[in-house]
Every structure is written in C-alpha cells, then in structure tokens.
Length: 141
Image 1 (tube, rainbow, N blue to C red):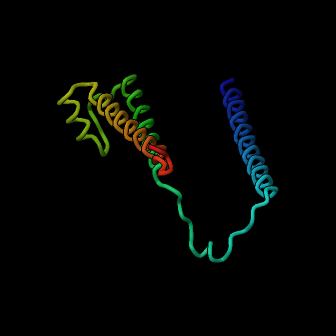
Image 2: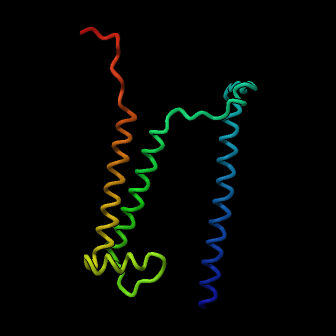
Image 3: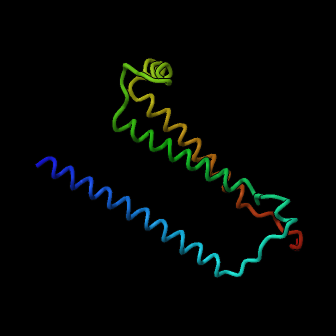
C-alpha cells in the first residue's frame, strides 16, 4: 500500500512538472509572437555599438532593497515561529552564539526584523526619490 501512495505522488509530481514546462513554453511562444506582431524597427549599427544604457538605477535599487527587506522579514517570521537554539553549527555559528548569549533566544528574530525594517525603509525612500518630479521652470510665481 505505501508503494502505491508513493507511486501516485511521484506520478502527480511528474505530471505537474511536465505541465509547468509545457505551459512555460507556450507562454514564451505567445510572448515572442506578440513581440513579432508589433512593428518594432531594428536597431542601427551605431545603436548596437553604443551598448545598453539603463535609464535610471534608482528604480532597480529600490526593488532590490525592498526584496532584500522582504526576504529578511520572512527569515524573521521563521525565527519567531521556531527560534534556533544552541548548539549552533555552520559558518554563522559564532555570531549566533554571541547573539544568543547577549540577547537571549529571540535575538535572531530581532536582528532579522531590524535588518528587514531598515532595508524596506531604505527601499521606500529610494522609490520616493525616484518618483519625485522636479518643479517646472515655466510656472509663474
């Protein structure tokens, strides 16, 4: 009986992977077809020689900081639900041991939450700086 259950789960997983691959290929094909239907003029040789010029790095910096903050928020949530306890192992074992001895069992949670808060706030400020519009010189008064 357990072999049958294992086989059914394996078959469902394989079916899901095949459906995911075929769906992705179909989406890529539709995107490529829509791109071909748009009348996009090809780049000149001078434009290709100039290379890629990003418009502004502020929007991407904002997204990177927001994503980093959300990742640390997820880590903090995981530490809140199941805090790590000694003995610690791995590359960060000494830092974990120091934080545990200095601040107790919830130290990793507060550390990850603080990094998440700082990263999200910095990302929001970067995004606001990017969206700020310069005042027009044509305004009267």
